[in-house]
Length: 101
Image (cartoon, rainbow, N blue to C red):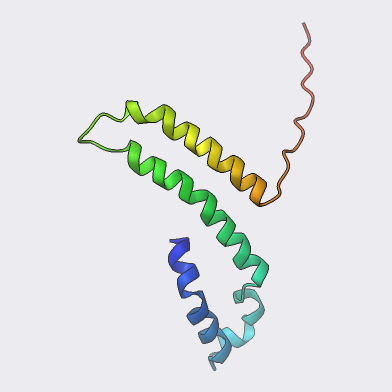
């Protein structure tokens, strides 16, 4: 769905900008997305696509899918690692957990 939205965004943006509707004129700032918003959506789409492919493969009904589970999980992990490096994101430190015995 996000993929289709991104494909349609130039047309939607054009309608928002050239429309004479009071609703569009009044809410133009709210309705318009910045380039950083679009970039964020594209990054999310890239991450979601990893899970879509694996989910589709593992939901089959005509063949056993347990065989694909470990390789798909590993593939998800490696792709997320590469995306993390590509987006230059570091892991947040986990809070210290104190166990009281």
